[in-house]
Amino acid sequence: MDVQKIRKDFPILQREVNGHPLVYFDNAATSQTPLQVIDVIADYYKKYNANIHRGVHTLSQEATDAYEAARQKIQKHFNAAHAHEIIFTSGTTHSINIVSNGYEQLLVPGDELIVSALEHHSNIVPWQMLCEKSGAVLKVIPMNEGGVLLMEEYDKLLSEKTKLVFVNHVSNALGTVNPIAEIIEKAHAVGAEVLIDGAQSAPHIQADVQALGVDYYVTSAHKLCGPTGIGMLYGKASALNRLPPYQGGGEMIAEVTFEKTTYAGLPHKFEAGTPNIAGGIAFGAALDYINSIGMTEIAQYEAELLAYATASLLKIPGVKIYGVAPEKTAVISFNVQGIHPYDIGSILDKMGIAVRTGHHCAQPIMDYYHIPGTVRASLSFYNTYEEIDRMLEALKKAIQMLQ
Ligand SMILES: *Cc1c(COP(=O)(O)O)cnc(C)c1O
Image (cartoon, rainbow, N blue to C red):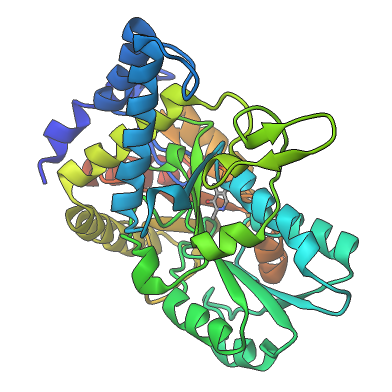
C-alpha cells in the first residue's frame, strides 16, 4: 500500500487547520471522500441528472442504469444472493428504523429482543420505541472492563421468547470487534432473527452476508469513503418480505386506487419517493475505490497503525485507554487522568488535529466506566505514523498546559 499516493486522492488532507496541516483522526464519525467518488457525483449532475425508474428519455435511462449498477456492486461486495435484497436508505439509522418499525406487526407482548451493552444510540433507541409500542422486552448482553461482551451471559438471555437480536459488528466507541458469527448462530438456534449494525465494520472488515447467514445487515456509505445521506439495508428476501413498508408514496406501489393500494416487490417496497440518486451511484464508486486498495491490505495497515498508536499513547503518564479487546479496529478511546476530554480535544484542534470527544452516541458505555466521555482517535488507511507522532506531541503539550 502506497499511503502517500493514496493521500493524493483526498484533496481535504492537503488543507490546513489553525495554521497546521490537518491530521484527520475522526474517521469513525465520518471518513473523507476521494476524488474518484467526488468526480462520480459531479459527473452525475453535469451529464445525466434525471429521475429514475420512470422516464422513457435517455437521461432517465442512464441514471436508472447507473443507480441499479451501484446496487449490484453493493450486492457483490457484501455477497448478497440477490440485488433486490439491497435496499437503498439514507444510512444506518434509517435502515434500523425500517426493521424496528416493521417488527411491530411481528411481536406480541412478552416477546424478547436482545441488544448488546456496546451499541450506538441508533441501535438502541428505535428498539426502545418498538418495545413501548409492542409490549416486547429489551434484554442487554453485558460487557466486561475490557469492552468485550460476556458471551456466557448471552447464552442465558436466549430462549424461545427471543425474536430478534441486534448488535454492532464493531463498536464505534471502543473499536471492539464482536463475535457476530457466534451471536448469529446461537440466535438462529432458538429461532430468532439477527440484525447486524455494520456502520463501523464495513470500512475495515469484509462482511459476507450469506456466509454469516445474517437476516439483516445495515451500513452507511459516509464511513467508507462515500457521501453522507446514503446507506443500505440488506435483508434476506424472506425476512424483508415479512416486513410491511416503512413509508408510503411514489415508487413503492404496484397499483393505486382510492379503494386499495398494492405494494411493489423488493426492493421498491422500501424505497418510497425520489431517492438520493447521486449518493447511491457514489456509494458504488466508494466500494470500487476501497476494493482497488484491497480490504485485506487496509485491515493489515490499520492494525499496524493501531498497535503503534496504542503503545506510544501508553508511554504517556496518566493515559488510560478504554476498550482493550484482543480483536479491535483502529479506534482508540482514551482519557488523561484529571483532564476533561473536551479540553484535550480543543487544544488538539488548535494544533490542526481532529479527534472526537464526548460520549460518541454510546452513553451506556460511558456510564459503565463512570466517565462523561473520552477522547477518540479513529484511524483510517490514509493516516500515517507521522500523524500519530504529531498527535502524541500535541497531547504532551496539552497535558502540560492543563495539568
Ligand atoms: C455511525 C454509526 C451509526 C449511525 O450511522 P448514521 O450514518 O449516522 O445513520 C450506527 N452504528 C454505529 C456502530 C455507527 O458507528
